Every structure is written in C-alpha cells, then in structure tokens.
Length: 510
Image 1: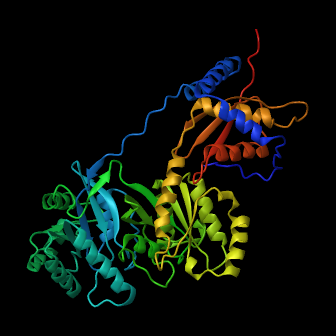
Image 2 (image 1 turned 180 degrees about the horizontal axis):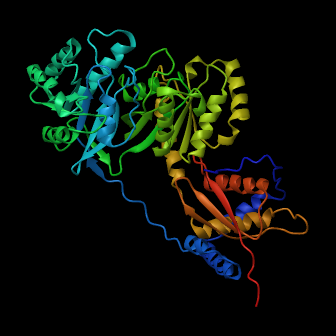
Image 3 (image 1 turned 90 degrees about the vertical axis):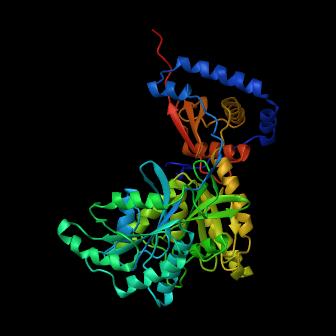
C-alpha cells in the first residue's frame, strides 16, 4: 500500500504561531464542526465529481461488532515419521498449499496449526515434524514438539507410507501413541490405486483398527478419513478455552534469522513451544500459538526469518518466505524483532518497510537488551534515527527473549497500535482540523496558483485512510506536513496512515 509519502522533495516549513491554531481548533464544538463539514460537502456540488466520489461521500459507517467469546474448536494432530507426506495431507485437508512441502525429510520442524472444516464442522489441524525414537540434537526437539501436539490434541492421525508398510520407527510411534491414550486413526498414505490395496491389509497388525488408504497427493480416501476423525473428536477442544468471535487478535512476529523470534515466543508462552537452535533459519513454517498476555489472548505467528530477497531464495526457503509474507498480510499487527547487539542491517530496514507496506499496525521490539552497554546504545540510537525514521511513529519496546525482561511491556504497545489502527476521526472534526491548519499554514503559491482543500473524509480504518478533495495536487512536502499534524493531533501512534488526493475541477457554467 502507498502509505506516508517518502518522496525526497523539499519539506514544507510552517511559519506563524502554532499554538494559536491549536487553540482555535480546540475551541470548535462538535456541532460547529459538523455544520462546517456540511457546508463544505454542499460546496462540492460546484465541482465535477466522478461516480465513485458520490459513493465515497455517501458511505455510512457501521459500528464494530462486539467481540463475543466462543468455545475453541477441537484439535486434530497429524503425526508420523519423517517424509511420509504429513504436510501434503495437511494441505489436502485445508484445501490450500500453506504447509511447506519439499521432497526431502525434515522440512517441517515445529507444530503448526491451521483452521480446517469438514461437513460444516470446524476444527484445528496441527502439522508436526517427523517423530523419531532416540533422536538427538535438533531432531530431538522436533520429536518433543510432535509429542506435545499429541498431548494437546483431541484426536490423532498417524500417517504411514502405505506402500512401504510399518517400519521399526512407525512401530515406535505407535507405542508412544498408546501411552498417550488418545483416539488414533491410521492413514496409509501414497495408495493411489485399487491394485495397491493389498499393501494396506498388513497394517491391521498394528492394533489401531482399520487403516484408511489415502492419497494425499491426489485426494482419494481423505473424505472417509475425515468422517472418522469427526466422530472421534468432541464438539469443543479439550485443552482449549474461550476465544473471541473472529478469533484473538493476530500478531505476526517477524525478523531476520536468529534475532530471537522463536525464543521470545517460547518466553511469552511460558514453554518450549517452538524449536530453537543456534543454527539460523530453524523455523520454516509460520507457527501459530495462542498466548495470554496482559490478561488477553493473542494469536502469535512466529514466521520464518527472511534472509534473502524473494528472487534469490530457492526450495523450501522460497516458499517459507512467501508464507511469511502471507502471515503478515493476514495479521492485524506486526511485531518486528530487531537485535541490538549488532548494527541494524538492510534486512532489518526492509522487514520494517514490509510491515508498513502491508498496512498492519506495527510495534518495534529491540531484543537482547540485556547485552546492551553505553557505547552500543549511543550508536544504536543514531542507527534508529538514520535508518528507521520512516517508522518513528511505531511504539518501541526493549526486551530480552532470553530472560523475559520487559515482556509485560508488549501487550500495552500492541493495544495502543491496534486501537489507533482502528481509529476513525469524525468528518466534522477532520474538516475543522484541516480548515484551521490550512488557515494558519497555507499551501505555498506556485506559478500564481494556490491549491485548496475542498473537503476531507476518512473512508476506512485498519489502517486509517484519508481522502482530500482538492483543486490541484498538493506538493509532497505539504502532504507530509498534513500527515505529521494528523498524527500529532489525533495520535496515530503505531499505525501507518494513508492520505490520498482527488483533484476536481469547478463545473463550467452553461
């Protein structure tokens, strides 16, 4: 989106007494402001308006729906050894290529939640990394995440390679599932034809009941599997609670690799929710986590770190990058995590700009603050002023993902950004503001002409968007001046705002 103008043209330098125009604005009553706006609106009839202008001006605003509480849907976990097609089956069930898939084992590492629906019933589908017995290092942490997914699930689908049959690792998974005492459905994947059905019969020996032959790639058999899964699951989640209508507020946690996104998410969740490793790029999929923060539930998404530009990435990293961008687009607020123990990089600046361009509310979180010393703090402030001036309006929270220091400061910053992201200025108050501002600080005269602002309206929020009807284009520097004063007067901390112009000419007299 085109938010605040970044044109390098000359800035507008206001003159005169700023306090007087602010005092005059404060003295205008709401009734006077509405009367002024009505007169300006009527004056637009003297100008050539287009069809969509009328639709914009006649727009009626609806009050925000009350966010009621509803029970969380049941949870279905997908479990199995590496490379049996779990993520492919997840994509088939949710009818979308959201889970990262690549023809190598170990692409999925965390447990990743998606919303599913079958025959009118909603449920949460959890994809997991491959489970292996006696795994070590990162693979051990991946297996631990899979077991936690089983613990929190209402039912489990065990996926096997139907053409290979049950391996020793598969049998170890079965033993683990028996200890958990959860309803288990057995999916024999990669069975693409009736001729391959004979390979499925031996799976009865695992003692998990009827094996369901499916082809995650082509979709055959998945309907019967889901029918059985719905029968095995309760109406609501056993480990869930109440969630707001439309879901908790959605927070995208973004940052370049190894700045501590997963560590911060684990600290906020109070458990090892996400695989953390010293190797950069551990997270591949966006990982959802419901977190209670500041006595409110939030849905955090820990996204894969973006290390290269899109055209330079390949394989699972390329698709993970696209999913990170998609997660940002679906979020309401973005927390951009920046590491303070090293200079801000081009990637950091690009990620902040990505969050701004997506139109999300924004919070900047500076991690590793426990490693900060006086000299580094001096240089950091200079870097922020130089490289992140385009997002100086974003709330700043200094945190330590390692110790949890100041994590309680995050919820107030999120609420501030979201409240301003959804803020609407009454039309009367908006036009009174512009009228007093232009009277005190008029647009410069160019070639004997001076553009006038005829009328202003705010057609939308999330983020706030303003449309100015003018007699000519306003210079970029003057538009930035108006934007700054909008922020100062109405407090748009934490949200990008967009100011558009519609130049309209006076009607010719017949």
